Length: 479
Ligand code: ADP
Image (cartoon, rainbow, N blue to C red; front, side, top):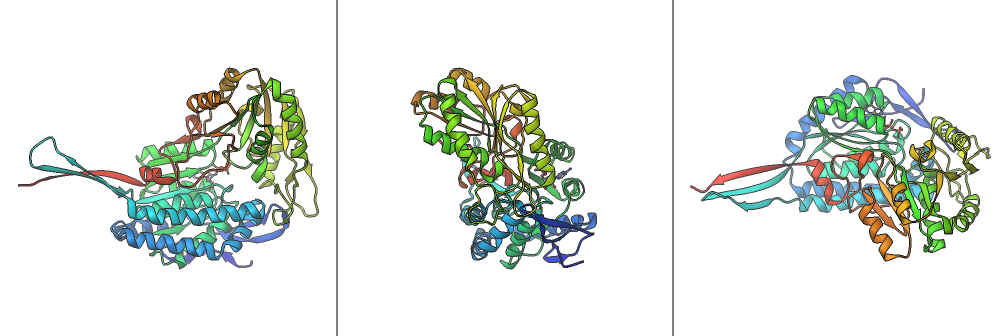
């Protein structure tokens, strides 16, 4: 077999036990490479190395950590086109989106380089005489990071950067569909001079490699982004050992269009939120809740714009929508397209298409005439598909918007101050967008959801310190 890309454990590259093939979903004849599967012993070694490295790293100065993160940011910037090309090849995001995501990762490392210097505690007077109290934030220790395929560099970045900034050591288990981008990031972190064992990469399947990481006794914190069933399993396993957990899972994000909306703004926000990145975002708008009086006009313009989106090879400069990530995901999407018709929707688009290369190409889809309770309006699909639900007024829109087990992101298009304010107050979600797509967030503010979408403290921004650090309260008597 050809060269195998290896795992990074205790500062050295290890061959693993077997390998996984990485192929381009835009062109199945394009073999990207072979990536090592970490053996159970290697996962144990990575966690032990992280625990050992922790002894020094947790006491490193903020300057040392800030400098490392800054060098990682520079390493990403220097290789941004190489990373973005890998990302587009293995995940299927179009190159412009892949480049934007890569730059986002660079900005995240830079942001946390600054945050490493800003971590602070409190000094509080005791209720007793001559005693001083101080709180400080300390690292958790070894943190296990389990990441999905849909943001192959941004999500690892927004977990690795705060983990390192606050003095933790890391074992990263990236998604098996997108090891290439994570491997490039690992090389950059290694070459930036990260001390051996402070950052480790273990690639391979979730059920074996991921589960071994979750169960390892050195690991004191687990941060996961992925599906609800996996998140639930990780939380259950973590509870047995009292590990700290942070979970980001699915969404069924509503986009409400009221009849006073600016039609162009509404259509742009919806096209972006529902279909860009092939709908493969946990913040995608998968339920379009449209007031009856604007419904037909909105659907007409949206359907026309949707039909003109260019579906194509992720590296082709005129492509706007890349392929679906895998055969399994394409089969799921196509099953939901069939189900939408069976449940009584008029389906526009959604068919698989053949292009010049063997890839998983699918046209974006609208499920017209959907009701709020249909399966296609309740379950996360994770493809370029959106249910269109007609409602009479704001109150009904609000009920429908809140009527799923999820609560990640929610959007409304309106020019009414009253309704946008009410929506921001009443909607059950971690993020609210007014006249903006539900997807597409800033990196320096909290990210996360409510209800079944998230569990544990928020990610990103300064909020990340709540997960990656523990508070210690110390008392000192002056005498
Ligand atoms: P998706 O549907 O996005 O693939 P998953 O939840 O299956 O969602 O995958 C997200 C991440 O979780 C991936 O890195 C995957 O390998 C990992 N994973 C899957 N199953 C497990 C498990 N039982 N234990 C730990 N990690 C897992």
